[in-house]
Image (tube, rainbow, N blue to C red):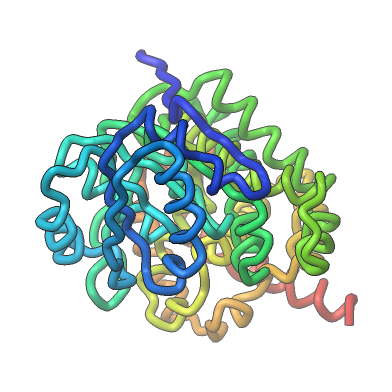
Length: 363
Ligand SMILES: [Zn+2]
């Protein structure tokens, strides 16, 4: 069975990185389209133009409409004639859109995240949504982004909720890769997990249990300290390499089930994954369950169905369980415990009960 490790060739992170990134951009392309919405463009335009001027690059700014959907990708592709690389700037949707545009045109992409909320900047997977925001397709792309530029000063200035959601997503990385390893499962690319992948995944959990609280405190104070830099790297780089090369399991299966329920549309990716992680821990009877629960609570991540905007309604829980068993068989197969629909329903309710009890104790 093949094992393969894939990653972007270059990842750079640091405060005030963008104005100095011209030489790195130039390695990838000299005529670049930058895809960003109006808010993000206001943040990154000036530093990127400074970098372009110093390195003699041409930049075109293309306004992103806010949703990564087929029509938007086609529209942007039609505007990219003569461009030799595409920069995606902002959150996961803008970056995934840029990756799809680059893939369509057969040219490299550059990720320039302004949030540390998802794995999109490093990943070679793109999530295509319908215009209403529900998931239409999860596309596996041929290549990882060619360059990832993470300006930690910009990330530190973003709303805290995104950083925290990214921690929820990154916390799950180790537990899912470990499950996949023990189940002799497959990565999202259908390959055997690598030692490299599982090692990076383990480091996600180690970094977060040690540094997540301090990083959040630094972000609240606007300090780009060592803990915050560590968590930014964990959320964006380690988590992505860990899941792509280590595998996904129940936490993301639950996430994908939750995305089918309109009342959870307000929850961020990492918030849904966080609850999925709690369910996975309960289902596996993981020895870290209590520590995971405490960290989720301390960070303000969802630990109950109500936190996700859901009622304890058996109907919807049955739909969620059915979705997981019908559509997420590959992730269920990455669990070392064999789950029945009744067992999963029990785990969903037990995780909710644990979360409610812990909240009761805390306040
Ligand atoms: Zn994720």
